[in-house]
Image 1: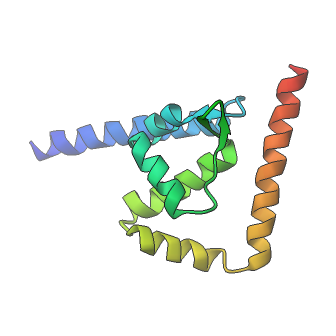
Image 2 (image 1 turned 180 degrees about the vertical axis):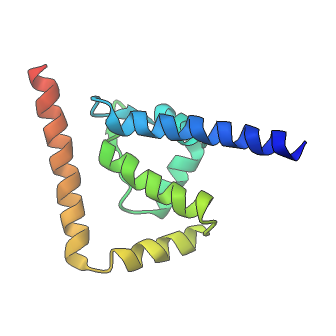
Length: 128
C-alpha cells in the first residue's frame, strides 16, 4: 500500500518536472497563467498570490491576461522549490531569497536580464 502511494507521488512529480522543463526549453516567449499553473501543479490563485508576496514576480499583462516570460517561470520555479520542496513559509522564502540576493546590484542586474530575455524572445518571434 505504502509503495503504491510513493510510486504514485513519484510519477506525479516526474510529470510536473517534465512540464516545467518543457516551459523553460520551449521556443515560446510568453505563457499564460493557466499554462504555468498547470506545469507547477498549483492553482492560478496561488500564482496571483505569489505576485503580491514576491515583488520581483511581475508578469506582463496583455489584454488583461497575465503573460509569463521564461525569467518569470525561473523565479516561480525558485519560489515553488522553497515553498513546496524545502517547506518554507512565504515569509521564510522571502527572507531566504533576500539573503541570496542581498547584493543590491544583483537585483538590478536580474531585472535588466529579465528585460533583455523578453526583448530577445520578441526579436526571435519577429523574424519567424
